[in-house]
Image (cartoon, rainbow over all chains, first blue to last red; front, side, top):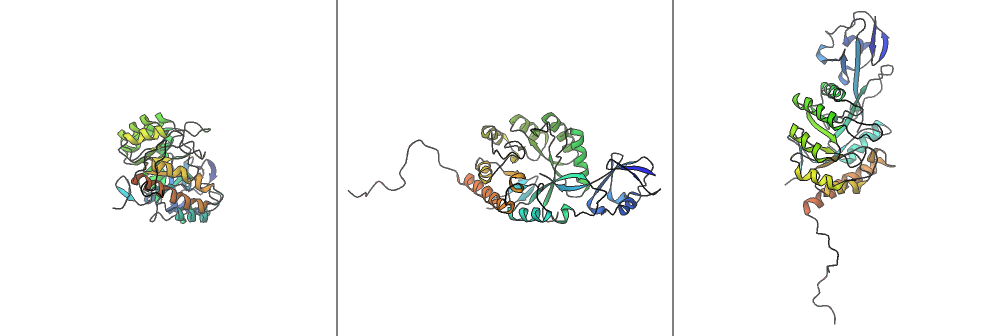
Length: 66
Length: 257
């Protein structure tokens, strides 16, 4: 199925959870925050939050800034 | 008695707050921050590069147990975006303190004060410890303090300009009326600029480019630490009044005839 991740269209495995997606993308969950359709997904809900066609996901982290 | 910076009930020995942007490497960032003595460091919130997610993370170099991480809302042009960024930052688990900046224009990077007020109101209500970046505007400072912000952070000069304090008189008015810490944020160019802010009685200085953009950032980090300390001590010591004419330092009695 297709979803948007950080503004980019990506095809991912059907029925994937947020935790599953992070694993597939090789992203350490402890260092990122995920927002699904403008709502933050708490880290403890990554496993239980299932993605569906057309979802829009933002995966952010801290970078150098002033 | 130890002279400490108190921010929202937490005490800090260092009055220098540093940014983490513009360094050549995370290693250099880490080294400069260590040398600066800063205990609070600012960071920005950005999208992860999903095509190269294995890149090292800033927090691998800055232990949140050792440093107070202060997420900023740099790049936000609306109150809504700034609030959204703060909520994301809080979810990262580094605390509730945020540097609120809502930019009004990309040439000057001056703050949009009405939008800053709007965002501050929401964030204070949601329990954030809000440190707003503002112009050297005593009215904005007062409004944000009354709203419940934990400090006010007037700029010295435009972000990254290195011009030093352009309007010391407005900073003095802000200092005179503020009951929360006043932290000069942005526009400092060199150690004497930081020292001047501290000599005026500011509670701290936040800077990034002045250190990261120096030819030798590590040496400048040390210079800034010393500048902040010198300025603070001079403020506490109480400087002499300026006079037009000389006053002899040596006794006038016993001069050889």
